[in-house]
Image (cartoon, rainbow, N blue to C red; front, side, top):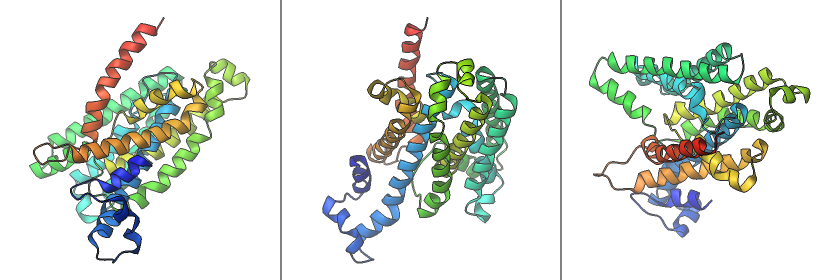
Length: 314
């Protein structure tokens, strides 16, 4: 809540708490009202939704794969969504239809999910390998789109979108992404008890009535809806899903079900904080892209996590 208020107040024009509280009763032409309702509020709401979705997806995937390094990008869903949006930009569909990039981004996420599930049905290791293959395939498609871009403008648009940002988002993007994210998070929340059973091993989970294949499919569908919607409107934003579960796990224990809601809240806070920092940090008058900022902060954490795992692994 504190970060939400800071996200509303901060920017090129700073607003006081009293100005924020009175925007709903002010003159419709008032500058503070326009800044809050049209610019910063949709940006903050979308940041909460995307951060919560990524944090929850990271916690669920780490429980499913029993891998502390798992995150939403591991199964190729983020790359598939990014490729779909890049195709829309490459063929100029965004100039004819405003929602072409989000729509094709969602289609790309669904296609990546189908490929990952079809080729990864053999178990957890097969799922990880299938996700890596889908990520590589989508990455090759993105590189091809950049290589064959008809002009520098198209390549620049694709690269800018891939860096991830909440700049210039409107209520239309919120309305587009929110239903998919909410439904996806609802689906993932239903897997809590099954993830606890799976932490004992697949054989033990099956003896408790859990169908591993059905659980994987359920989680893939939920992650596809969340990550596909998030990536389709904000671009590629990494490391939030990786970091959030590790930050909350020391406080809630190592039961997968107990990390889900705290990871979602932590992810929302992380993304809001990163958005505020990317907005305020001076860098030659240019705002740092959100995906770039999260990568700069998340990469050192990832190295620390790898060293920690290597020290504690048997």
